[in-house]
Image 1 (cartoon, one colour):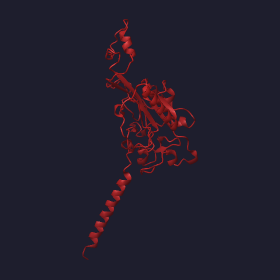
Image 2: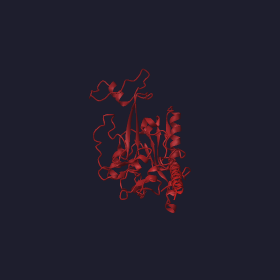
Image 3: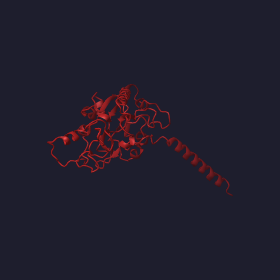
Image 4: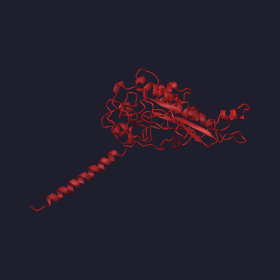
Length: 308
């Protein structure tokens, strides 16, 4: 079980006691600015990890997204976020097609017309969400069986044969990632393709991504690459670009899977200021111990004061 106090090492594999077997920490950098919403990552994840079908063949009715969110049977989720907000000086392909005389109306949803200056009033934000593999992972702290472990790569993995399905990890996760699979009663989430990492392969989702929106590698290198990408987007006139989950001083010690976003985290369904949920446990236990000691002293005093 990891320590629960404030200043913990930022090297989770070392903290977990891997010693000489520790490897450079691996992670994901997801650049949402180049995600095209193809869901190749979702398909690759399901195929490689043999994840059961989750009923996602039907549209949710909320958008073109058909998986809605992460679950025990959806370890990668591509969100489709529709916004009535200028896209910039671009003319989306659907608008070009609509302007062509030979266009045939197939009854599909149409986009609002561009304004006089050529700017669209509509844009899609797309982002492939996944387990964050937190540096300070509350799911590890609360697991009573040791089913959740820290690997030599700094990732967090569920051991299916050890998990008893208690579900303590579900409310402990500040991102709402881990979930129980009704079919087997166990808890499941992204493993960052631990079996592939062990033999030097790239995780399936990153391997399948056609635009390299999902980038895999050493976490320190990815953080440097991400900062350069944000600077490039700012220089290109996209001031809303920002990183999420990259800061080792945040409430979870930084994430092993972090993102470049084009809007506020809440727009993507991410908490704006995630905090490891077990942070206050030491203080709570101290207060409980003081209360118990006070109660015991009071009871002892009552018995000591009784007449013979």
